[in-house]
Image (tube, rainbow, N blue to C red; front, side, top):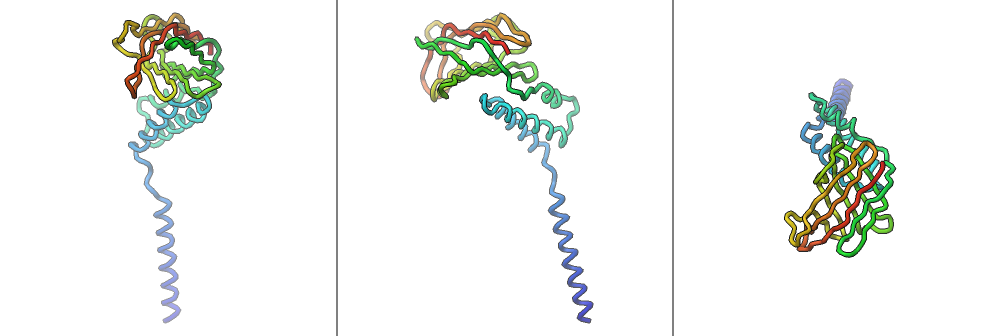
Length: 212
């Protein structure tokens, strides 16, 4: 009788152990909402990447897109198109990205150009300081007036965007004359306002003339 009871107890422990193992091995797959949220977060991190983190953030964004495809599907191929449009190699960009802010000339000597879908993103930094940064977008192939979008200039702790309408007559304007697969050339100027404080900067003689 003891032998039967002992065997029954061991069998019960084995069954419980297998049940617990099976439960831990069959955790529910991530929901489509959580996968989509992860993709959005990876995209935001990629768009905000610096030169030093660009490759890492780009690959993380690709992975998030692929995870969303694997978990939720991609009926119309939109996610795959985004993956195909991502180039996660650090581009070599040469040329000029400069302007005068107030009376101070500002030249960015570290320039990167990335293209996602039909949008080309231009990012500039100064190699000897972290206090200055410029970002803007142009749609691939578009030339003419006011083709620069999402312009931001960071000066120390403030981020500036175009002030529309201007306060003192230097209206925001841009003109892209070349926008090929290897170069962007154009000019820009206008008043900028801080996004966090009452502060206006006058930007003149903005030049983009870069090859990538």
